[in-house]
Image 1: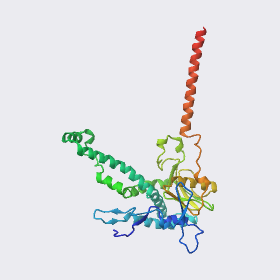
Image 2: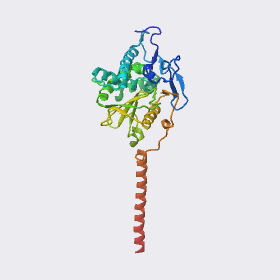
Image 3: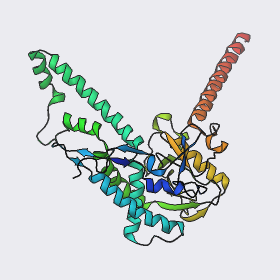
Length: 344
């Protein structure tokens, strides 16, 4: 257990990971730096990797006796060290033949998808809704009369059968709001690993002078056909959908993409257009900031694309228009029949 200020500054995106984006033109006597841009801006600033994407005690669990438990931080640090070795192998286009190294790589990817501030904030928001509902129910119970309380407790909805697993307590929900990572990080990694093992992995490469960018939420999950379904179903698509892709930039020259596409595996080269499209995806997913290895951006990264012709919205509009036309034709036919009878 850590005490005092040990391990207080904790990176939700590892500095060893973002260090790959250090500007190659950094002056010799200066601390290496990356270029950090607000998510919807093209106005960058220089920052050392150690000075970005961190928060005091981000993963620390404060035990009941006040002790700071930094087990999550220590485990992630060890994983980051193993990943650094694997990334160097990928940069040399070496095969990751060791089962342990393959699992370490996939574990790093799963952790990166779950460990960021964006994910922490999302879970806090969701658990916060549950807490507010429970607070409201507690307040209502405390303000009710004895008769109302008896009626509430005897209601069938509040009866629990003997074989029913107990639900989480109010204290559990409070703990989830205060530190979601304690509950969600390990569970997410455990759920993702078996699926990632089955997916095809491609390492996309480029010699583009700017290359791939990264961000404060660099692991991007998209469904390439999400536009075909109603907006309500366009949230987290899940890794098992055959049209999903999970991407994670490795460096300005490499990006990993997990997919179910046949043949989408191994080391694959892309051109500037492909780089720009993948960077557009990374920047769109960024929570607050994205990172470039140079003080440069491209218009293509911020393009607002027209709605696809096969989108759910356009298909719905076409069907609606078709229905209106069909109805109008039916009305005209009925009117013609009436006119014919009148002529007779």
